[in-house]
Length: 115
Length: 108
Image 1 (cartoon, chains in turn yellow, brown):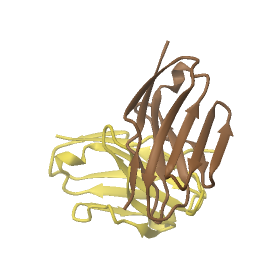
Image 2 (image 1 turned 180 degrees about the vertical axis):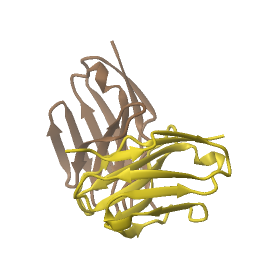
Image 3 (image 1 turned 60 degrees about the vertical axis):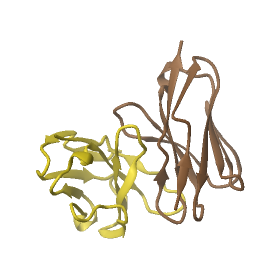
Image 4 (image 1 turned 90 degrees about the vertical axis):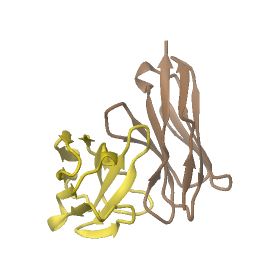
């Protein structure tokens, strides 16, 4: 079974530029998550999708971050414009469903450096 | 809101046993997870507890006390490859919230 795919793996941009990340979840997984992990901290949920609908985006900085999941499969996360404090690893995860116990499978992440 | 506390760093000797503690405060409780994360890699699932007690899986065990808001991860027969960060995560009435992680160093 193929895992969660993410691209690019690394990205360096200057502040005020835009960047987009792509995620392809495990086939058949209805729930998709985007996390931000700053160095030395645990992952912080940015947005959760159930199929192509948003379940939770309470921690997404909506003035600069946006995400979509077209057709309930692939997802993109965009930052426009980027700030220095956006430097982090952006992790995509998927699970079969949402609920009490559905293990989340994480992708390798995209390491973003904003200079 | 939710608050999760775990020690920042721990060091243990190869072959020994180590216990990583996690205390939490949440509104609602729907399960506690432990994840392992090697440096530069994605987190991988280790264990899930929703009822009080001990769950054992090979060299790894996880314990939960809901009344105390407390969990621990027990690693036995430590190996060098166990050097990693261990993340405690709690699902309350909101989606999963992760602690900052405990960086475990296994030394010879």
